[in-house]
Length: 116
Length: 113
Image 1 (spheres, rainbow over the protein chains, first blue to last red):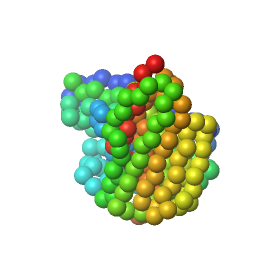
Image 2: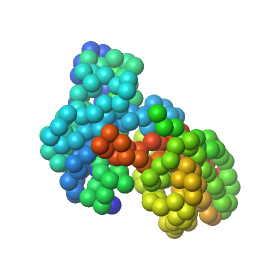
Image 3: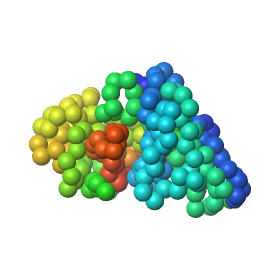
Image 4: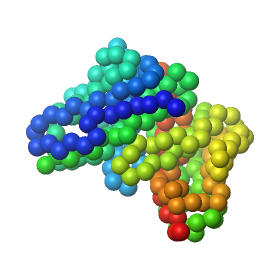
């Protein structure tokens, strides 16, 4: 199957700093990528849909100025958590739609963000 | 928004037993997908269902897309210790110009050797 990578896998930062998370599709071109966050023992909650070359579409309740998404190429999307606070600590997972069609999404391994 | 009810929330079974879990929704979905997530990892696709009534197998896993398009089940036969993990159902739908997945809350499976 298609491979999606995320970097970093874990990050610890101080409150008030910004953190960038990268999501890459390694062996296919992804016109659409998605960003999810997952709290412990919870399900995945969609944050935003990222389309290459255009602005991301954010879900209701997600602050676009806090969670900056850039999808500059067909293989890379980035999520920047600006002015991070402890409540932003979570597991962030990206996914990408592969060339087999929009009906399946391939997920990255996730990034564990801890804000002190 | 759309919500999925996934049950059971957790289950403990003996190795070798069969397992069944299901998801229901008040909304219709175009596709149903089943994922498995190990701790600290992203979800991995197990089975994708595209048509109402479709029954699909992947090794010891069998899943069905409900005829009403509002439900799906996943069966695991002859469970083994590596089946341990959290299983998520996801309903796929098109809207606002893009395709999105709505996830159930997961079923945590524990297998006792």
